[in-house]
Image (cartoon, rainbow, N blue to C red; front, side):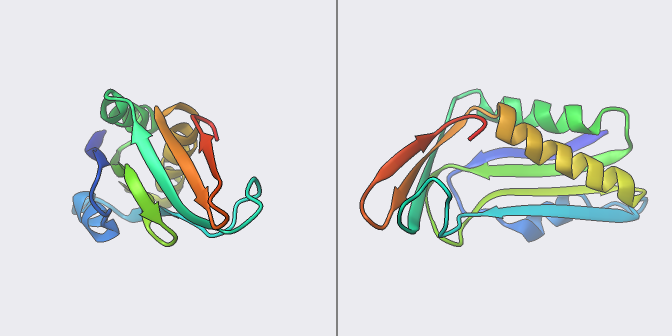
Length: 141
């Protein structure tokens, strides 16, 4: 139905702002997803200290398309943002809020958005670890 926010941002992400962006009187269910930078990664030998995200110039348009495709013909609202730049452990990297009349649609759309972001969004991350090593991860990683 509507994508209220689809943003690639250099600024800190605000889950509450995304929740407000999907607030409507007809909404009966709201789901959210907050992806954070974590200290552990199976590909890292030592603790993760930071991630550095970069995005293709078309990433915001791709994010909007991913959200719209996830909605499909459902009556739902989506607000989604992905962060770029250097993030430290605990920072929000991606935030999604989905509202619909019923919980099943909200859960399905939210899950679809994050899974498609991981598969399709042209955003890459460089992972920094405590030992000074770095590892690039791209779409799907």
